[in-house]
Image 1 (cartoon, rainbow, N blue to C red):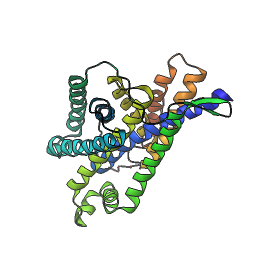
Image 2 (cartoon, one colour; image 1 turned 135 degrees about the vertical axis):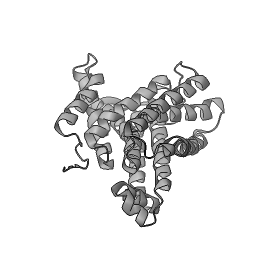
Image 3 (cartoon, one colour; image 1 turned 90 degrees about the vertical axis):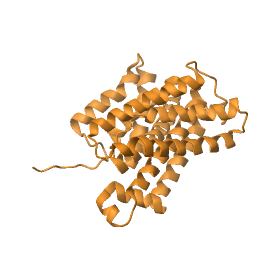
Length: 290
């Protein structure tokens, strides 16, 4: 029972962080139909930026986090304006290759600035062990679950209540209809990339607080693909539920079976979902008639 509880909390932590990173992926896809292979590098940059603000510049973590988010917003907007917007109208494979190249470029920039060696990350949330029903769990994991859920709630309120959020939903449903209503689609694209960078930066800070900061954090972005395929490429609730499912399955497999199967299980699920239900659990099923 203790092991089960410990694995459950670990899985929920990883799942909540995966959901945050997947949210940015879904936002970009819903708004612009672009599959962003650089989402993992957004997470990596977010982790290194908060590390630089707190350790290298000596700022308080709250101020460092604010500056990190502002830089993330700027980065997302610049990438959309300078790299993705000129690709409008180009074949889908060309856009995909651009995001793959962007991921390599961002990783190279991080390596040039901070090097390739892992660094200890200054904990900005409590790390002491907490006993829950006999199981010992790090307080940082409990805080990470709470912070991730709070941010997902904030994003949900943004989409349902704010003018920009409602406009993003309109663009995601039908770009032509949104244009006819006076909504600036290019403006919404910029919003999507900015919010994707913000969600990835927060996820990066949470991951780094638990495992430290290093180049391997970008691999966390690869685990986003099974999440979004499982939940649905265009479904925000699907990103949340998919993240939790993948996080729990990874934890249970690693705890009870081990032998590295937990590392490949998400991609086995990805293949199965693509074979059985390619639009995911909550994705929109598109039927083309010819």
